[in-house]
Amino acid sequence: MMRLQPSRAILASFALSLGAVAVAQTPATDTLFIQTGVGSFKILPPGPDKTRGTLDINFEGTVMVSGLTGTVTPGPGVRLELERKDHNRKVFFGKGHIRVSGEFRAIQFFGRNLKGSYSGIGIARLYGEFDKNMETGYFWYASQPEKVDWGAYGRTLVVPPAKAGPVAPRGKVRDVPAGKAG
Image 1 (cartoon, rainbow, N blue to C red):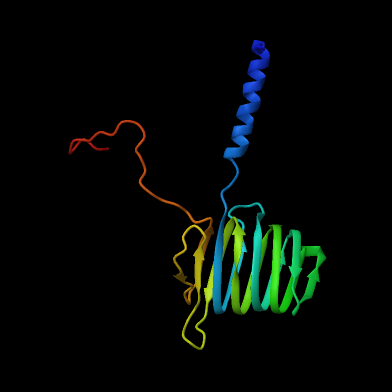
Image 2: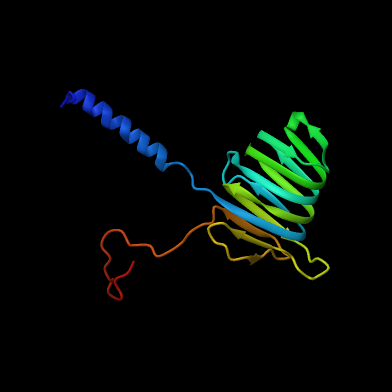
């Protein structure tokens, strides 16, 4: 059996630890499903950088994509309405299907008969309107399949959804006698 020299063993363990850090820092993703008769949404990055993901929707209305490094695939019935290369912005209009995939600064939609999904990371702002059946639509996550009302007001969602639970205290916890706090 071959033994590593101490300096090579240190280098090997360092390389393995870098690999573990790279895996640990990969952000989690989820899929947000969206469905509304009349409404709008905007998907933004959770911080100052671009976000990444794939939007896949059937709709009737307008979709604007800003700062995309990736691909837009409009289906039949959806056309490129406006392109501003100086701002890296494209606006699509029509009735049909569109798929946007890659890194982007923002994706906005306004219209009706929306049904689709967004897989990735980001912040989604939903704005709903009542349709002829007094419905505003629904959203749900792949990880949390219970449908939630879209609502007729502004709503901000995080993709993947924030998870909260009991937090274990760090260190020793002790009671402070009355009158000694401060």
